Amino acid sequence: MLFHFDLKKFQEKVSTQLRPWQRSFQFWVRAADIYTGYKVFQVIASLEKDVKKQEVMWEKQHEVAADKIYSMCSELGGFFLKVAQIVGKPDLAPAPWVKRLVTLCDQAPATPYNVIRVVLEKELGQSIDELFEYFDKDPLGSASIAQVHRARLKGDKNDVVVKVQHPGVQELMMTDIRNLQAFALYIQKTDVKFDLFSVTKEMEKQISYEFDFVREAEAMARIQHFLCQNNKKSPVRVPCVIRDMVSRRVLVMEYIDGIPILKLGDEMEKRGIHPDGKLAAAAKVNILKNLSLAYGQMILKSGFFHADPHPGNILICKGSEVALLDYGQVKDLPDELRLGYARLVLAIADNNPLRASESYRDLGIETLSNCEDEQNEMLRLAQTMFDTKLPPGVTMLQPFAEESSIKKIAVKAFPEELFSVLRTVHILRGLSVGLGINFSCAEQWRPIAEEVLYVAGRLAAKDLKQIHRRGTSRRRFWR
Image (cartoon, rainbow, N blue to C red; front, side):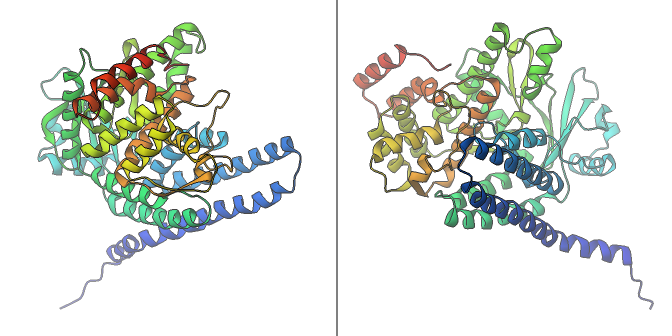
């Protein structure tokens, strides 16, 4: 009996097995280069006494680092595209980082159509020709986990969106996350007094859910029902799922026509609307108000919320209506955590240092402080972490600067389940900065927080009236 050796299959198998190791090596080489570049530059910059010259030097260093981070995220793809979405926010990262990373929202390499076709037909049990009147071979967009195609079902007049998972992406993303966890452990021991490891553990849990499109479809239906039930008109539009066309790796939903929020300014200019004029300002306020209201209701009233409002997931439709896409990352907060966060929202809205400190303890956020004015610093920390409003004259928060509250008060332990709330607030802040609107989500969410605490028996009627009266006398959510 002759033994047939298939060299090509053997090479493919070896390549597949080595791929996680290759990615790990590439990550650590690049991460070490970026990190050591900043550490060396810190020493060099400290020798320059002229503040203006130092600022110019830092700007150049950020540009160099931005190019390296962009290259790492775009070339490795996968999970690192999500890292770019988290880091590349105008309120948090240096301007050169934001400028480079903001373009990575939907730039994952597309899987070839012939591969997508195999996945789709296997998952739905029928051929594309049997299911669809037409199916656009070129994707509308491709992200880290899946890509979406425009199509039309047989016998239907309306277009749909077909979301198909990239084959083999899950194992690689889990490798990426574990590398980032190891890096986070090192950083929190050497440079950042924050429990970054717990944050990355929650990211691991949330992203693992994204590979199940049946779960995503259920989340879309649940959130759509909740928002419609709690409002005369839902503040945001949620796509409808097409029944019987959902599997673990394929999801078919209604097509929503709209403009990506990052292209809003360009679209306004095309229509002769000045991006800085009164009409544009009113439209931007309306967009942000509705988006923030939806999140306040989801987080505080329901506890079940869309946990990934980055710009690539937001469309602006006719009449400034907001459509919220991609329900792969959703979070279901336990009631105690939801009510604890409601108390923190009231503390931030009222600028109450004592209640902010108490709320942190109730939420299980463990801190260590050596500063003199601990209570006020704790309030500042709460505002930095859980409110969207920026202090007067500030356009970018630098949470890891020496004068930052995070430097003065170490966050020793942070509940993993609260990370999704933290991330959501920070993304909303990034959107508000990008739209040129400074507002406080804590002040806007105050009435919702009061209501849920009152209904739960955690707030007396007399306190509800007092807080409500203080809130309505100065409704200045929007700056």
